Length: 364
Image (cartoon, rainbow, N blue to C red; front, side, top):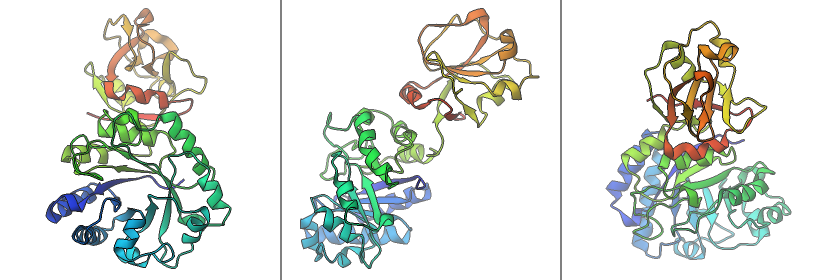
């Protein structure tokens, strides 16, 4: 599977170049590597020149640049389906076509002398990728990319996204998707906030949106669809390790030394013979078998998202860590110390922790 990467989008025609440059530099410093640039709304030469300048600066920062184009874009820049040279000269690495080309044309484009890649629109769940494969594209130059959805209630469901993904996963092609800033108003037209791929992401914090996509283990590249994301949003997103399933936790008690060590252990995994009542990490009980974990609270019931560590009352099960999945789960014999709770906006991510899945908790 391709290494997972984070990206941003810019709309230079809607901002000063100075502000766009600052945004590019800030995001790059935080570890963002990919840049999405939409040409589909560009009709004026002066706007095109601003985009060229922004891309030039982005290439100086070593961004990998994605361009969303249509026939009007090709006419504006003096390119054709058979010669993308003028687009490539701008510094574009991946070209996405926002209008239909034939499967033969798309496959043919991968055999270009300039080395650019071709991204296919994969959100229609059609058979385009299979048809393209019939015409023998260069496999290392094919990617799949989902749309973003500015209008509320038009985004994809998670189940539909995964269904779309499967066609591309079968060929091991990289997959891209979008999350949305709740503050940036730059998009294909001004005034658009939150441009996610998944509808369920629209109201979630940007870090939770990104986790949801990365947690699928199917999406390689996640872009912020609108601009400018705030400094806080960029920083929150940048802290995510896309290869690990991590949770934010609100602590409910002062941790003892073994409790702290168990909570922040970096190799928790769900037991393979799963129960619907809690996510059960058992190997910690062997690592901390000689530690004393005193009962420290008298919580009678636990609720979904509560994180507990089994205490001395649990006998041989002492040291196990559980994440509760059902509300009103009884704390039998006061065997569980309530350590904290998964933050409310991340409770939806618990569904991704299946049998044998590894997970960690983020330190406050």
